[in-house]
Figure 1 (cartoon, each protein chain N blue to C red):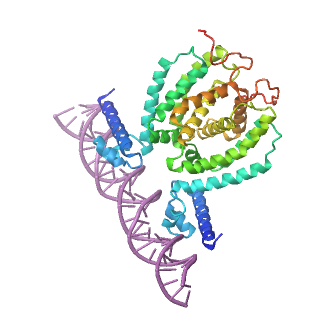
Figure 2: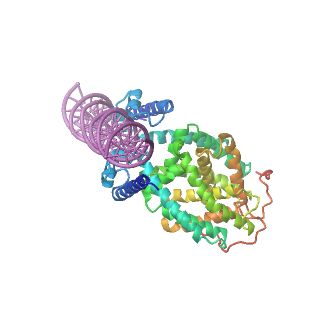
Figure 3: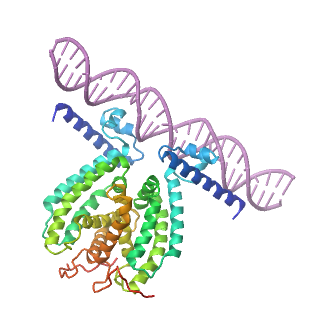
Length: 212
Length: 212
DNA sequence: GTTAAAAATTGACTGCGGTCAACTTTTCGC
DNA sequence: GCGAAAAGTTGACCGCAGTCAATTTTTAAC
């Protein structure tokens, strides 16, 4: 890395650190870009050559943290445990990270789940890193007979991810407390695995899973 | 309704109509509160005695529209059709409504799924109206043997709602096009009903197979 | 009809997010 | 080492969301 690039990385880091410190102290809304710049020892305009908007600072921070988490999960995950447990471990780790700071998490999730058109590109990239983490787990579970072989890995991922979003929603709306999250998640994941239909039901509507 | 209250309703309506018109024409960000006020024939400050923030105007609009939709669905829904079809009808109606205007829908969903602490109260109220719509359907389906009797109605609702959010996410990120939404939704709902486990599986996730 | 309290309206004002033309620093070919 | 082009930095400036003290309108008691 050239000298110039190294300095840029340092400045970026300085902005992030100053911003996170101030956001944590005074809250996101009450912290101005000018304060962040001052605190990082640079001019206000410079902040905007590193981050396009104020929200992007949060995004930069959260994405970095999540990448760390993912990298760690890849090492620590044990593919021999049941799929339910693996998913709970992965998404509980993610949940704890995202909700470590209530405000950051909210802003991050808002953008991540319903991104601006301008941010869709960056968003897909993050999602794809997810799939790299989850697909092998799903494939292994399929081989073990824990998941239906004919289901799309993407759809299975989607299913768990959607329940994860719901749990976060329930937490933000106060429907479940922090301590209940793990149980709630396990219940929903279990429900997804088992299905909502009675097992012995023969009332199968004639809708075979459609291909996409 | 007193004369005063009637006038307030009219003003509120005028603000909403002016705002929606302008938002549609020029986009949300590019429309200023002052413009809205001018267009509604009132002063800028008055807007703030009807809506606490700019975003709240969108919320007011979307909530109203969704209430209309719900009222209609209650009349039109046919509890004799399979639960899958009923859910697809309900959530496709909702989907069409929410995404009628890309920008409104995004702002609304962001607040609805990850609300500010200040907005949680209003949010729960909206959610509860949902349950009033869905619970009877679920109860009927249970009686018909289409859903496991031992599952919490709330959890079942949650499950479908979470997949609905996911579909919207997929649409906003361009993962699925508008025409594919209905199929995608049906696939995911079907998957939720059937479960991710193989049917004949006797593997209870509590004591999984030790393999490697 | 008078009047005083309550409710509603208003626009000048504040503070901040984001822009950009001017300016400073770094790079690199000679 | 020199000069000019490229890259990076800066803070004055703009437009707008949201506030609030002053003002107008409505209500209702007498």
